Length: 231
Image 1 (cartoon, rainbow, N blue to C red):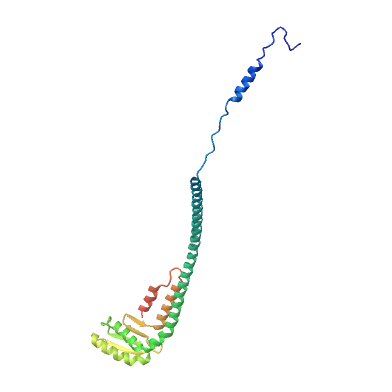
Image 2 (cartoon, one colour):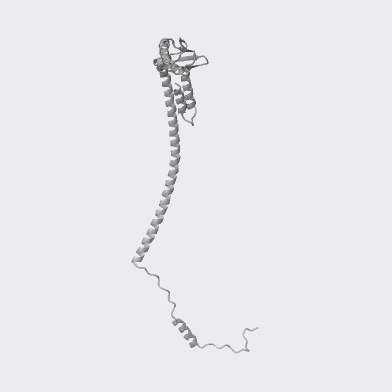
């Protein structure tokens, strides 16, 4: 009922002077001193600033180098693509030029061949016939058909050639109005041969057209060479 217990003696209080002495003692204790802040010399500060500047510079250079390398790599990739296009276009242009050159050469040949054959008709016909006769010396008779203006010159040349090669058969030279100057037909018992400039030109032209029709293979020079070799 009451907070005070009257049965117990009251607590003894410390004397006032002891309490004051204890407080004075606590107040007299020295406070813990904090370490002084670090100090730097001017030289150290300059070194630190230079080191920080150099580190930043190196970092900047590294980033710039990396960026430059990326730009160069992208540029090289773009150039490679452009080079491929340019090379392909150049190849197409070269192929077109080659084809045009062949067409021009073919046109020139068609214009020049008849005139050349007419101009050298006798020599060409005589050469062809002599080569044939040299392989059929055992034939009893050889019939040679040429354009009318060449009959007598060819007969004279063949008679001389036959005698020189030991041909004992008969050589008959006849005019054929269907033959152009420079053309000739040679007939013997089991065969014959002919020189037909119109067919030769057609064969050459067909070979050229076949070559021009092959865009990937290019001009078939061997084919054209073989056709010319047949002349």
